[in-house]
Length: 477
Image (cartoon, rainbow, N blue to C red; front, side):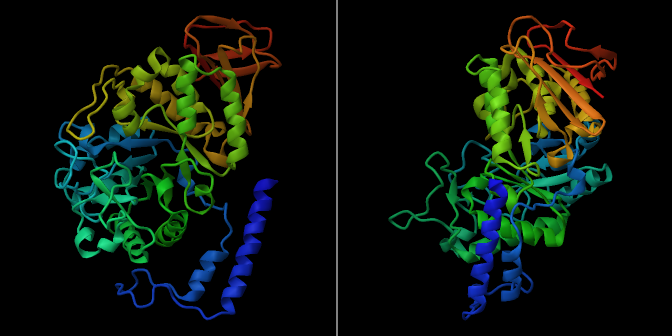
């Protein structure tokens, strides 16, 4: 009730503001700015149309409803570290069952105040060019075209919060940047010393940033963006950006944030940091199994069914700065992965995870994953196929609701089901380091199929179920 009443109030308030605005002299805030034709010209009526749009109504592209996402670290995922070399891996990624590929930044990296030998890909020197170490624009266009031929989509990592120190804007438009009390350029925070904070109070900078994003849609036909540190960029910029980009081509937008208001007009999906950290705490005994259920109810209170949440065990940040999956989850990787792929949300695979990479990849130098467990690829293929095929696991409102199932070992074993129509998933995961025997409570006779062995299984509340330490059963219908 609160969600709808708040939105209703917002709509009334917006209507009042617009009525007042139409009865006062209107001045185009872009008047006098020297833009290229069609670059970002809006008349007053178009501005009003944007204001009238109701919040909470992000329209997801249809291909996202049962998608799994893959994060591609171009520098590290192949020995060559090039876009062309990564294109040669696309069929392997398609074979996993991936629908969306998030490509980490491919633009030239700043040299001034660079960290390490090669620098951070999030220190961008030119928003509309390709890092020559990775290839050229034609290589990226070829990558996008090949992905589309394989029925996959490409979203590009976008760094809107800051740029490199030697971006041309620092010379041509120093007003695009935040300044300290002495009028000097400054980083967003002291640790990010290789980048400069951009000034979103400057309307010309916003226009230039939006035009750079449009470039990659119109020139390369990408399908969306993953927006770096989206929480530090003003929400109104993202809201307008989504509308402008959707006018070219319907987008898929991922926010590096977990703010509810990002979902109202700008973003399809946000990060599931809290869930990832909670899984680590549970595995290490710092949180109880019951805390997972409490978390799920908090999510229901905060987010709507339309909001996609991204679930993951690792990303480029987690891997490089916080350790490998093995270091953070130990022997519980598969148990946590089963939860990550079956709880509400879209699952992510990071470069090398599908082959059991157990190496924390260097962030500022060339490195490569170590493929120490090739057989785990079949484990992830099974989970991804299940997400693709079983409607109960689809994303957002397309999938089934979460319902916890009580069991006689609730301190160690987490059990739940999701159902959509005739499709059902029943997940049982032992999150302890000891073997457990338990019964499911209040479960009528069910005839299901083991997702990993395809064996038929009948189960009821009288059956004793045995799970080894960090073991799991995943049943489907």
